[in-house]
Image (spheres, one colour):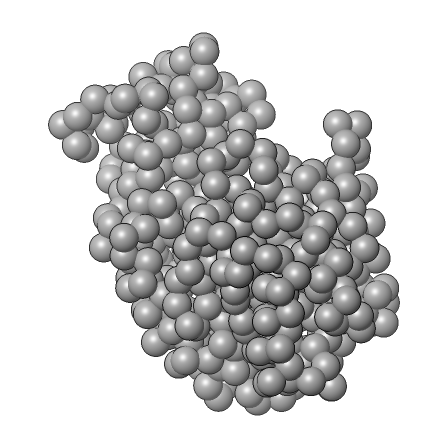
Length: 397
């Protein structure tokens, strides 16, 4: 199993893909799977056609990324694309994509995408070692439940929600055959190398918590029967001494999200984070993921320094998870776009930390509007302000 990455800032999409293809082919001759991440300034259909032309025998999944991408060569901002490719003569891979409409049954659609991806790998009836999931915003929890229901067990997932530069709907997905701005894409991995994973928030609870007593979809309406925005605003003021600016909630809440305890390891709880986006007309908080009535919601805190350093720590954790394996030969990471925007002046440091932890093996990392992964305790989840990582190791199964 061999992995290669490449990126380009060329304004001409066709020549950009050609340059990326040439660099990939200098390392591996015949990729089985290619993951492509790109900014909203790219034309997804042109990218689809160009990658299909360059790699007609490879499975391909593309997903838009917020304002840039990252590989072992560093962070690249602005108009660009990056690709991750794997050649694995002893492994198999498969992909599938579907478009969604307002009347789509999300559960059924997700199961069909998973089934088609597994069928395309030539391994029907077998459990993949890893699933890469990319979807457009809004249905991530339903998709994860569908995957769990279809397979019967939790399978490691590396996932990121398609993003654009300003939460304006300019996100997209593609595979070899089609492009969509509303859909689900999956790649399944049956690799010849061992897979390790990690999924972290890195934030800590400050002590304030309340029960979600009224929820409507992704709007948290009430905490302990009080308007959620008022409760959150009081927590924020207690912690910072400042009042919440409702017009700037997204930015202000990046270091102060809400969290739900998902499990614990060695007596230490870990949390799935939810990022407040805006205040609703009825005093609730619009979120980037679903909450359920009756859940306890914790007021969480992080620091800019933590956001810079934790990418490397998450990769270290994935390495420790497979402590008996050899060094990684490559990896995939997902880094929250909200965190990226908060530390954009330090993204070179983020990339350097991740490169160190990856031991300079090739990796790729988009910036997404939601992250999906598997905690070390086994739970698969969709959260915000998270980092998800998977590594592939030299020792064979």
